[in-house]
Image (tube, helix red, strand yellow):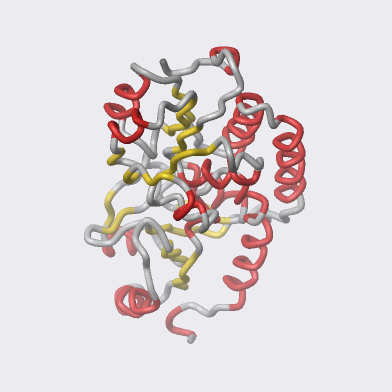
Length: 264
């Protein structure tokens, strides 16, 4: 069954399977080492869990039979990260907590819910307080900087206004030039030009943009500032949010210091 509320789970789970990298990191933060029995190959934090936990495939290619052999009493999944068909198949046999996180309030609600589900509410509440304090300390100018954020190459893909990344961009002082679109639309260099892109952020994930891609794009966008950014800071919505405000402050300082392409 897909849990609709925390009360839908009868007992505190002792065998948890996580299908979501950022929520796996949250389980580690909540000291659920013993209870977490399996994760995906993309759950890279903490690194040691990649060797100490059972790896049950990728986020969109879960090895269903392997999960069933573990007899979990809670599976943590996400509406965006995992496929509907696989989540429903697992939910037919095991309790699945399905999260849907599109902004910071959603993330805070998710952390609180997982804290209650796993009987770690005290630590989850403290984490939420620290996250709120970090984001409240960010100084956002009234005039946001127009920017585009690329997550993929061949074809180029960006992010729409209904995504978690869009919310993080706004919180660090950026105005997504594709905010009028939804989810993860394809785009082109021509569209980036037409959007008046003066700041282009290249994410480290899911596509691992490198320095060479800045050079390629700069030739077509000579007036734009182009920077590599840590995709985890913009898209992970668990305990990594503790580090995001500090990263955003450093990023904004870097943006202000880096000249546009023609002025380098």
